[in-house]
Figure 1 (tube, helix red, strand yellow):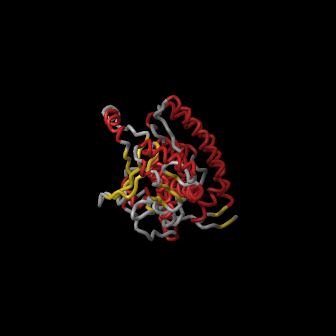
Figure 2 (tube, helix red, strand yellow; figure 1 turned 60 degrees about the vertical axis):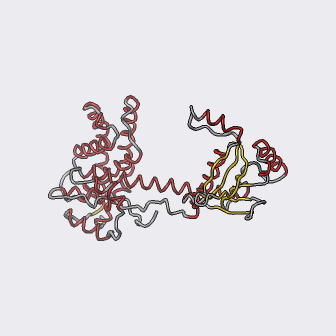
Figure 3 (cartoon, one colour; figure 1 turned 90 degrees about the vertical axis):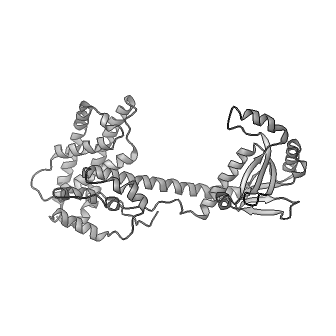
Length: 382
């Protein structure tokens, strides 16, 4: 028999019963999905499912360290699992009593298998008996909170979790919130990865106002400038490459400029559209009936709102769409200059539960929350 510390019990238990927990989760998910097909209001997100599985693990750890005689109560664990599942399901309150009983009957055999596995783990390992408070003190001593929780987390999550919630429901809310932050970070990191690919592509194929460099591009711009009624602007050139927005105006005092996305964000520079004069009347009439009418041809105008000075004009087909394409590319390049700006600093589960007050018998149930905290990352890491 192996002697272990209290803090090791969670890792041992999770490794030992992982398959048994999945045996409970999978049929429950299938059952809820079946109900969701007949009632669209019933939905169970992946984040809620993960949080619910943590509740089962937390209850199991409690049984593992609880110094009691006899077999753990399968009915009690089943009831806890069903209650937590219904609370985590969107529209779970719409489940009828019959459906709830069906859910209990569905998972009860799998819960019994889990409890049998718990008994095996208890026989193979010797967990020192301890009171709930001793367990909590040891867990907190090993992972002290040494950062000030941002106001955003306090207002969005921590203050919403108070003593009126059952501990398992508090766990679901806190775990779901942390998973949502992780998902936002994953999306942001995917954007950074995509932006890196775009930067390499822009080195080879810049986004231009009308056509590439070369004789074909020159003839295209010459034709569009004549069609637009601005033949003297045919040599003006605007492109977005890996360095930013490049402006080439050979007849201006400053013939080349580089503009960054930060200047567009701060409205130091604005991109706008100037359609040809002969389309003004038609566009004016069309916009009396529809708001989002775009000119098929026109000039992209780069100007400074502060001084009112026009920096450049260059002709383009569907200039509004071209401006959007250029701005999106510039935003991606700006993201690479500040890759950590959009990432959320992750809290731990005990940080989100900082305002969750316990009293009396609730100390025992607090074990479920702290031992289910699988968020062991450094709060400073994205």
